[in-house]
Length: 266
Image (cartoon, rainbow, N blue to C red; front, side, top):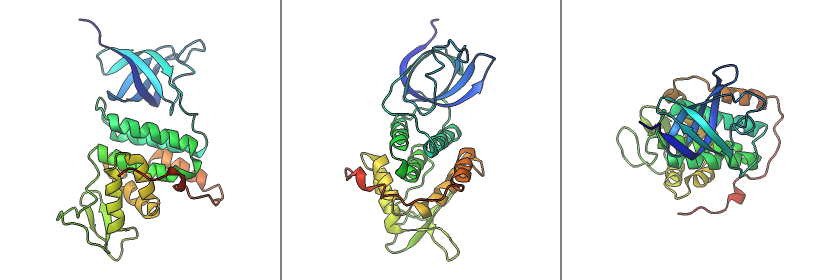
């Protein structure tokens, strides 16, 4: 029986492991096959054609063969389109990669999420002033597309519509519930409904980015708790490194990061 071959599949490298003195195991996110593992033989040799190509946060076209859990990389081409994120943007992109590694099962295709990820990486490289908004928007889309985000238009336990003027908190198991007096972070019904509408938009990443602009400080810890709950970790390694580095840098005033994204489709 012939060995299965996949050619020129859109992909991004999420993580790399040493496999031998000259080879690596790659965890890659592909558009039509989801997250898969590839062995890149001889990639660590100075003469390898793969060496300058297999970088994280870069759009690639990969070809591979095999039917085992770990396939064999046959070809790799850089697709271009944007520069490599640097500085904080590089750490933010690594955080997105860690989320995908922890929340996506292997061989589970998410073509829409792949497209959102590709745009998020491009925005991180081009819009240093919008990093936090990009992270919040992608977190929402990742949770939604993996079936882990409750409906943001109703209470989780009763499925009753949200009441105007009432504040709600997002719980990992219960969905939205009415905020209590001791809840540090909550959002009003109108904000949750705006986020749900953005997720249903034809361009959900940009729409969610804009919707997050007015509530990201209260939304961030609620999404983080949900991500921790479903990934089984208390702290994401890349996120902690990013926070540690940012704490060493004095914050600077920045222009409005959402103003130039323009209106979204309805």
